[in-house]
Length: 342
Ligand SMILES: NC(=O)c1ccc[n+]([C@@H]2O[C@H](COP(=O)([O-])OP(=O)(O)OC[C@H]3O[C@@H](n4cnc5c(N)ncnc54)[C@H](OP(=O)(O)O)[C@@H]3O)[C@@H](O)[C@H]2O)c1
Image (cartoon, rainbow, N blue to C red; front, side):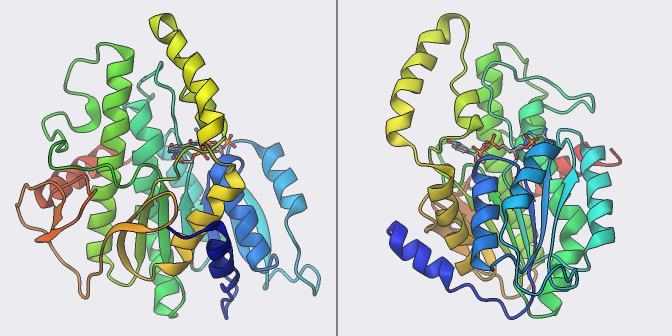
């Protein structure tokens, strides 16, 4: 476990020879904001930074306070901009990706933190998707799928090409295999708000492992990092303790305890960047300090077989990995169908 000082020293050694292009989906607050601001500090503002979210005012305020490099507003050297998008709908994500493709020829870093954490409102979107999965998982799949050519363009220039999903890595276990009979959480009866939300929460982590295993195996030169941020004082933190009815006292207790065991978004952001900067290529499942719990590097594209053992990837044991080879196939196939043409 690296200390905060070690993490900061490591991050401060990030000196790319090129002007990095980084997209922060969820950069208007929370961990994403912390990561964006720290990233901008480490490159003294010399980057093309794209913030994605709904809150235009928050984005404008953040952009106004980012460091600006010497040499004035040379837009070939740096740009800090906002792309507005409600990512709960896949059609919005696809439209935002078109906008980004028109602005950027390559992407070096794609960081995804926008999410949903209410345990009281499981919901279904107007596109017919489970709301938790739409915000915690499906939208992230669509960002990667749509922006992958730009990541590949960065890789082709021998630059960094890294994707990070800040969610819930390292929770997978052979004792808790992904339920392939209830893909998308839409087959089993949706009775009991808490139970439905809990199922989606667990699924979103397992599915993220599966999608990153899939993309990493197809793109051996790109890093796909699924990371758990730990307990962080953000709006998500608040939302996840907002219980009602009989569970109200649980919310009170959690709100009393969590400030003592959680960290600030800025402290968390340094650990997330530590994992982002140091992992070069392959699949990484990382803990809240940025250390890898499991990882696998592919030397050539790999197609997975039919093995259905959870926490084993292409024959390699992967502690904390929440999918199986068969699970990757089923989950990715289901996801492509569920998000298609929206
Ligand atoms: N905080 C914790 O203790 C904790 C613990 C475990 C896991 N996590 C996970 O870590 C990640 C980051 O957490 P966080 O605490 O930073 O989350 P957060 O504070 O809830 O993140 C807020 C960001 O998500 C964006 N967002 C939310 N809904 C959106 C929507 N419909 N469309 C577009 N953007 C949307 C917000 O943008 P706008 O407001 O501009 O729309 C904002 O930029 C999440 O995946 C979370 O589930 C957090």
